[in-house]
Image 1 (cartoon, rainbow, N blue to C red):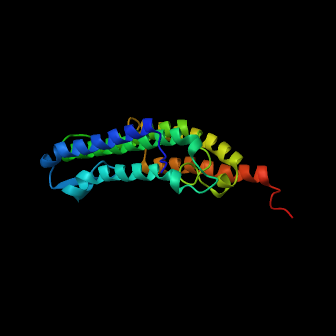
Image 2: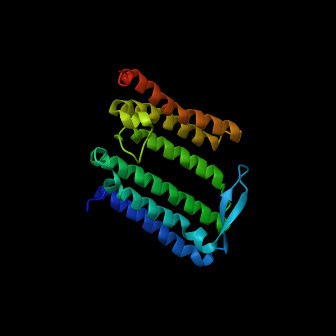
Image 3: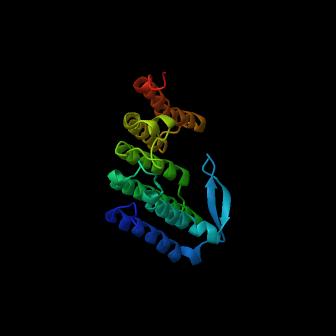
Length: 220
């Protein structure tokens, strides 16, 4: 059976998962019976999980994500194989695993009493993740699992390529906004609205460029 991730990226994925498990194992006996699981916009904890679930959930998510990404090669239908950009898939996988590990480290540190502003750290972390993803988005080729998957990008290689080039810039812009949020306070509604607008731009663009390139395809 052929797996998706190249070996050089697979061992990094394994390392991140092992680090997560070792981190939880080392701290487990010291953790309280309830683990913070959600923060509101004011940075206040407003939900908790039981100790076993709260401690191990992120590790389980990492394992599940890695397993899913490894199976993409098998899950992809004919004509949408990902052999040509397996390295990019490996990079994206490890970026997401690293981000989940960051969430876990901060979450459990707060559970142990560390005075960390998790919302600020996570927002900045998401921003860095978006900036990194933006740099690799343009290297993705047409597939059903990763990227800006609209009816128009999946129908045309050229629309996919052009949309993802634009999407790369949008992701970097979104990431920069999120990183700046850590030092430049912004009303949550304004931040969400701006991100929604930027996220919609590639979708609308994919439709516009498809109509421009294939306007006569459906004519009798």
